[in-house]
Length: 389
Ligand SMILES: Cc1ncc(COP(=O)(O)O)c(C=O)c1O
Image (cartoon, rainbow, N blue to C red; front, top):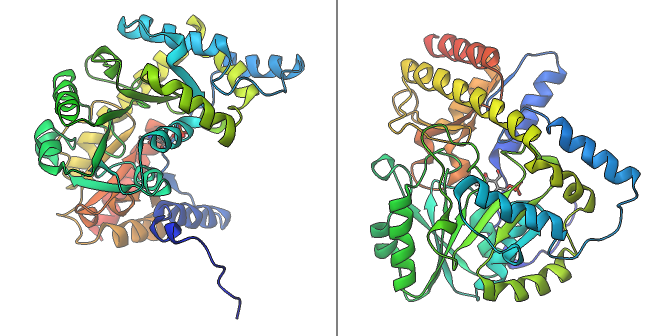
């Protein structure tokens, strides 16, 4: 028998993504020749826009293969800061922008400089599963606050106030959210900020899906105050998941400790990716991304009523990201088993609620519309047949 290696106690709190098993099973079925419709994948099906790829190729040819400053290429920090002016009319000092290895790197830095052992961080359940692990990694306590359709699957100032304890140090929200695609209004965000501030805490806002908004205008928390941590990434909107590049706009006083920590744990984000991303703010790329945003919107507008007609409950129209978080209670008592059977019998891969928290996970399924309309239609047809058996 092989010996189980001794790992640190904190690892007991780090859970895997259940969807990875499902994805592995889907790939195995594909290897056997089965056709699988993928609605479980949380990344764009589009490849990185060509001008960004070409900029990366040029950077390699020019020999840009050394470290950059830990905070990132000055020109990229400037480009990111300028994008807030362009998109939202907000003036952001480039000195507050830290370029990181994905927004995952940003989340790790933020938690590390904010959270002492035993400090609590409030977050919505369902929510992005890694968040609680970033908190655990620094010996903090993630507090999952159950949210439902009544609040658009988002925290509210009232929920934050009620969940607050003397241990609470920070609140983390995402708008639009993964897995629900729902947004916080500017008003709701401001109210959350005000209560967090009044209690002496810090607000962290994950805006990684901000470019992907289908109804109305986006809104950055930077329009509210400059003592909010705002996380973002080139992964989703810019279609650069594999380049591992994100950023955080930090309150001025935090830049120095975050720089010090980034020097130690990352040295810097990928140089190649940073040079490529310089092109991300060009007009040419903006036109490509706008085209893609329209396509995602069409997909959402097709898939939402199609799933509802099959018996899934989607009480809140998600205004952004590329996810639908569907209630499956009328179709199955166990969304995890349902997802497994759907994959094995109908060849449709979806993510069961279990990946996103403990609040009614067995009653929910996340559908990602990160595949073309024709595939979505085929997926819906297959689910229909599966349900009628
Ligand atoms: C809400 C949210 N935040 C952060 C991330 C991390 O993304 P990345 O590290 O690629 O920027 C993801 C990825 O799925 C996400 O959904």
